[in-house]
Amino acid sequence: MNTRHDWSQEEILALLREPLLDLLWQAQRVRRAAAPDQGVLLASLLSVKTGGCEEDCAYCPQSLHHSADVGGRPELDVEAVLSRARAAREAGAQRFCMGWAWREIRDGAPFDAMLAMVRGVRDLGMEACVTAGMVTDRQAERLAEAGLTAYNHNLDTSAEHYGQIISTRTYQDRLDTLMRVRAAGIQLCCGGILGLGETLDDRAALLRVLACLDPHPESVPINTLVAVEGTPLEDHAPVDPLDLVRMVAVARILMPHSRVRLSAGREQLSREAQILCLLAGADSFFYGDSLLTTSNPAVEADQALLAAAGLRPSAPAATPVAGAPAS
Image (cartoon, one colour):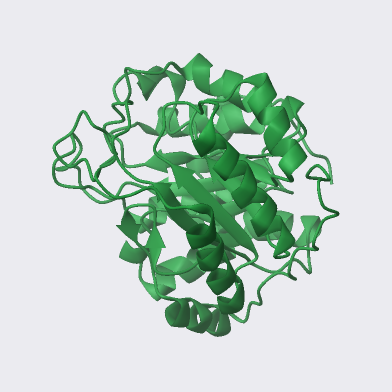
């Protein structure tokens, strides 16, 4: 399969405007050609440090700039996090993702604890993902040395719409973080959010940035806004589920070998809408009872969803050699 990194805005807009059934057919062809036997990667997400973030992201209840700030919860220690990771593994998760509501990673005891958590998760035979804001070159190298599989740092929206959503960090800051992570040999987990007041052009522009990265991000989470009272976007209308299906399908066509993950907002989707997303090429989702600060479908419901769709979880990740960098 010819994997491209030179998609134009016009090509992506044309895909987003395709008749839905034609778009789904194209996405299925790409999905089956790229990875015909690949199962669904189940990822569990835990908030290690919650709230009090210095960023002013308009959608986020963890920002200290908003009345919705959910700060005040104690930061979890290493053993508490690894206990949750063990429970996630026993429930069937293959990837364990850990979040810190930070603008950037700072060296010191909390970062040392993060490294210990990464090593512990990998020793459990799971993939490890971290989201914690901006990183330096050396911090990215230390995360790689600890065995980190992937670093999550979403672009959220297009560069043109970005200033309407965030003022405390630039789009270039986000791109620079992605490059530091990639240079350290860590996989990228990078996607965006629907429902931020963006246009179809903004959605195409976001996908173009992702699809023109070389290599493509290994994981592409597609979120939909969960409008939370006390945030600037609290009154935004829900996203049409078919818009999410279209976004998933186009992401699959543009990035054939990436994991396209259903992320925030999945609880608002019907079973049928989720199955349409899987048909469109989604091959990963967050699995379990919570997703940072919003709820997520329960394990039993997710297992029933996979059974109804006739899909299976991916094989568990192999346990790495201690201290080896992520592949």
